Picture 1: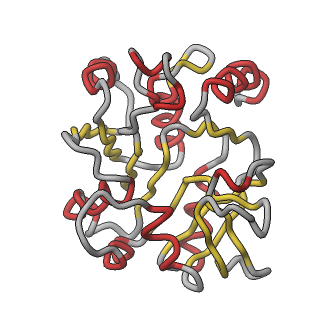
Picture 2: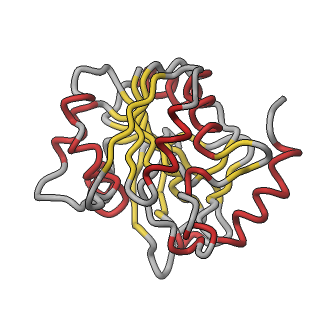
Length: 233
């Protein structure tokens, strides 16, 4: 199985930390987010991971060069940011033969077992399976409406008046044909350009366990404090 770890963002909300450190290399406990994700992929049975790079790419590449444990990692530099969906499109040839693939935002910290997502996707084989969590600031994310069956019935990215506190967690299982839903040229975004097209055709599973978007300095500091008690041994 393959996965795409979306790690190319500039991390502007994390400055000045990200002036010298890419978001995916933020240290939580004694490991960067990148390694936490790669270990989670390995535990879930992912063999190959594509990591997209843009900001301070040498920092990530140098770190990856020192890794000897699975999964196999392919780093792809984007001279211009393609957007999360644009990255998937640009690497379609690498993904299209797969039964399914994962796509995850590298700036999320979670102990969620990715096998839960994989099993849910395989059981019903939708075009996409999304993950969701309860947020105290839903207007800052992609707000989901979900039927009792788990079917996605509504989606709005960063709505000023959210209809619920159920928010997209940025961890996805996709069938490669989902990329047929995207047109035009990059940059394009999963939240703005893809997910609205999947209403009525995607499933949603809840993130169980710890989850935090570490996209701001305050959130990162909280994650550093919380993670030692939450992380699995």
